[in-house]
Length: 337
Image (cartoon, rainbow, N blue to C red; front, side, top):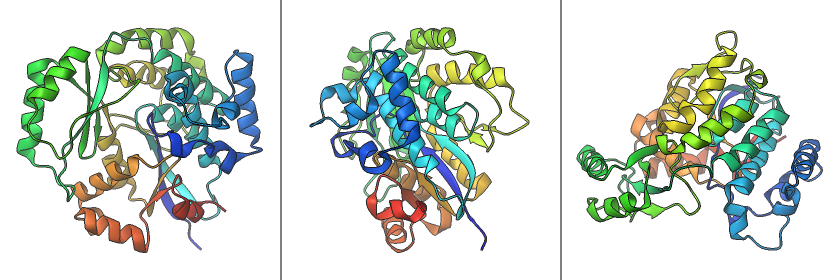
């Protein structure tokens, strides 16, 4: 029987919340890799992932970058290792924002230990930045369609207040800037389907305000950790890094330069992944499933597999899901042996 082809997506910050507490214990108890990650944290004088994941209750400490980033990376990477390779062929890997570091490890561009060290270290480095934060703007209507005039009006308001694009996320736009600029933007926006949502504990990621984080990363993580991906790796511009075509220095330079300082276009990454590799399914690694809606919105925008609306997407997901979210118990079993 021919294997089904899958595009693997690695999630970023904001995907380990109260419902995900205990994710590692539920799905990866006894994992050799989890033990390695715990040992690396313990050696560095940090709380282990098992302790954080096994806390009695979810606290604001779980949302701090130095805890959230390694927790999310470990959940996603261990999910990736658990995929049924007898049934599924991974044709490409991508990620959203911080998920790029996980994608590097999943694609084999860095070793598993180095991938965790990068995610863990960047959880700390991401807190080194100029003052500012992020907000999510929902541009889609109830049917997951975007009015081009609304998008233009939002971009004009951003320009008036010096607010920058941070992540392009299907029918949503994550914006970043100083707190005063974000406050002014929110008062000047056209009517949106939902009020802007400020992301607690997030800095002005993917903007030049993150220069200190970029500088720290370049000093901390050696170029020698990087190699050629074993499967195609799609970055936050939609560029595909392929085996035998990827230079170590270029991949290192992108990871700690452009990827930190410029907008992350997850929409472009997914569009390239779907159009160029035409996978039988998309697998969204855990924890959580907050990226599912954004991916669905992209499928609607592409009219992929005749998925032309939110209702059509929901119907397709109910019958034979094209998008498999490993953070969703009803779908996880599809891809785990």
